[in-house]
Image (cartoon, rainbow, N blue to C red; front, side, top):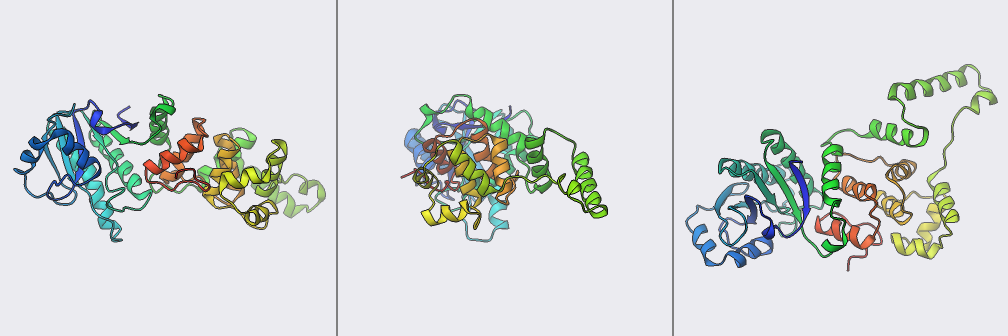
Length: 342
């Protein structure tokens, strides 16, 4: 597919161009910028000295020198100063202008790190969401360009080789920027429990039950109303069926004893991230996870990078919290409660 996420060192990729997030003077001051300068040596410094100052969102190119790419495309990402629209627009321009420049140079593949996600203090999730939005936009304009978003961390050897390809495909198929998700989630969760039905059939069936109740408020019609387990009932059942001790669950999801007690007694509902952590602890399927989210009052949000990535991990059967939290940390997303990242 033309877009994929790769868990690798960007400087080792054999692509036509890699993107270097730098500053207006190409200083090589930190992170990927420092790594690229350290590999390329003084020839890169000599090349950037001939370039004009790099304004926010712009892209300029130099040769790849000692790297296995033809070009290094330098771009300057914005620092987060809570201007929101301006900064998001500038960050998106880093991706769009880099792809356009690579295309004009004859490139057919380009790799990005996650720009502005650490040193420029972009909020967690916003940097990744902006990157994906811009990349998908570029794919529409340059359909023949292979675009790779790279992340890097400690557990490359522990992850299945096919995982990131599957995650990229799941993200591409599932992610919907700014799309309302209540109806799609309702249909998905209903289908998970009752089989797949057309949404009109579900709505009409519910209306029929309500009409019958209004016309004939009898126990016979009341018995037709399907009552599902609450979140608390489902959690207690899972703990009983799997012989889970309270302390094991407390440690896994970062809850206090009092907090878990209130959830198990139906007094409080957990946070959305806690629901994900519980689903991972019990190794629930993606449909079971979405059902748990609904019972806690949440919907799976196809415009949330956090939801897409965590659900993608669950869909691929990855439940190892070290792997999950390290990936979320590498993407600068919020780690789950009870995180094992030191």
